[in-house]
Image 1 (cartoon, helix red, strand yellow):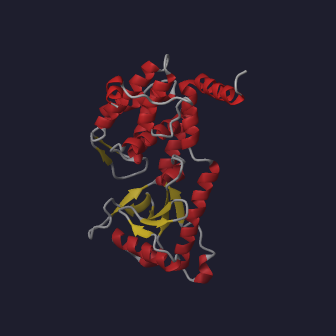
Image 2 (cartoon, helix red, strand yellow):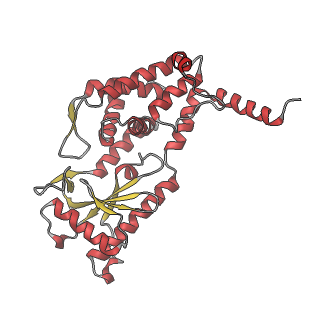
Image 3 (tube, helix red, strand yellow):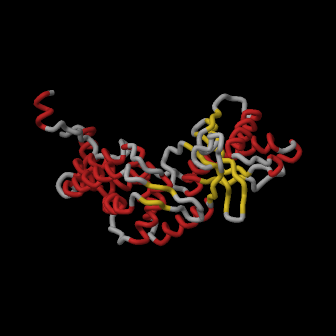
Length: 317
């Protein structure tokens, strides 16, 4: 009579094999897309930092009454973050009384305000904003000034002495992304999850904002492939033809120059996706391993399988 544990393990392996590659993608996406509670927790952390700034910039009797001076932006604001969430970006509208002409001065004012209210050393300044290390992730405060066109935020390399401002419209960016996602039955965000995981896993030289803009352009101009893996493969091929170029986020006044530095990674990704596609019918494990090399260790493979060495390397082991 077979051992019950052996029967259980055989059943688990059979179930994983029956899931197939599409099922493995579903498991991966569930692991990489933050839960509603994770997004809520990230927002709570940002609100704590914002409240500290209110206490710093406003008299104590007024801090409780201040509202509307912040906006969650970036991947958390657009709900395109990867799990676990590592950073929350929040725009903080500077009080008009500060009258700061240079963005570098705005950085220092925000940093001083936070450090005056939060008693720990985990506060630093990067080229975008002031970063506060919290319990589970980081909160980055981006100083901002509201304008008729959106918000003035620091330009990249804002810590230079001659630092200046640029116009950004994160509300328009988020609305445009939501529209693309609704028109494509949620596929826009799913493809972004794959691409951001790929960027993280193999250090692709392209910004997350550039990926967001390109993905929306891809779905607006190209035919959907039917499967998310096929859309990934089609995107990395199509994207190379779109760059180098200057692309502009919705509502922004300044374009983003996108070079061809990411092309080598895109070519390698296309090759691996093709290998996975060819292996999928006969060998789900080999196909899954190709995707794991592309998307990182979070991509699942059939249970009770081990990656084997190529014969030439096995002989030398």
